[in-house]
Image 1 (cartoon, one colour):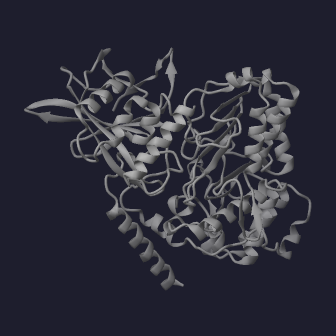
Image 2: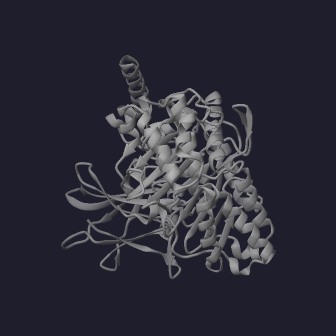
Length: 191
Length: 395
């Protein structure tokens, strides 16, 4: 408990020193947002996945990721930090199609400032993944297992969207932390 | 009047537009998340109209006189008097106010409650207290006193002190969009109050939601019922010391501190809770599986402390109805669990307590201050009933 409190104090101190937050967050920070989409890269279709969650909550959830908090805003994280983040996601996120893992690879991650009317400014960790589009017919249904941040912060929720090429988003599922037989509960993603 | 309305509307639009333009790097989860509602692009015309109605004058509900007109409803406490008082209020207000106050019943409308300040959640149904004249507010006071508990720091007194908190915050906050003022508490009737049919008495505002659902002359649901307060634990405002949630916190702390080491170990939850789970717009967040210490492991003294903690919430409704809920929750104690994280004194950020029974769902969370710009923590808490939230209604 003392370690966690110290960590929180350190995070708050760093954040205040860097002038990125105008007030303490008196209400829970936003949850994870996962946005799946499809895009063309060199005439090949691939799946993209953008995952965002608040830095402050991530540090509480995993002290191994503390080094990320000093990274410059709006710049790609260092290779080392990106690898740490990728390792973290490998333990807390899995996407499957027809019982096969879709090999999402973390291509880039960065810290962004965000603003919320009731929360003021805070920092988001934004992670960009890609995976080759599965061959064959329909992309959906997919199976998602995800417990990043929420494996520790139980008031954290995740919302998953599919984004059309025109930018329209369709909410697929929203969930909170839940384990089944010791593993993160898997959610069916379908359109 | 109209000039004032439109100038306020223009001012609000200007502030909101400026705020929207000034924002950068918006969170992508503006649509839906476990925090408060996020920026959703340009505000709707309806929201702007509601925000333009916000006021900043204190309504002093605690010292407002109850008018003699309510004598027509007699002195026998109960459902009949409650409906009579509501009829007096409805007969006295303008058509414009009545249209705001008397709405059709639907669960979707009932779900429009929030912990947020009035300006941050315009969707709450109803009329602002400050839009009523003093005599009408006196009738509102009589209505709320009929529906709520009358003990000090509970029920109606908790409503008054929570309104006082917004008057306090308005003296220290520069967030003018938030609408920190006792002007901005809202009352609404969802469905027509009468001896037949289903309707809800809604009262809510920043850090407060009261939702009594009645059907055919009986209370069929007293939840979701949200309580929070900032500043905490105590503040001076409107001529009094306000401690609306101190006894709730102290009751939880007394319970947790009474546990043996072994019991604490069993009650300690995994993880960190930065807020309650089943807050506004999270009706589905109550867990199916219980976690924590079974109440069957408690001795009689500890059970008494637990019931005292529960009563700080159930006692917010009138005594006769509160007794029914307390009887129900007492009968279900063998199948109820207690869970907590953080300190047993419940005085630190992210401290969290949960009572989870077959029906009862009670959460208490401490989190850092937001509105007063002062270092410290403030509670959010919710009483829900897993079997009759919203009166068990589904649509």
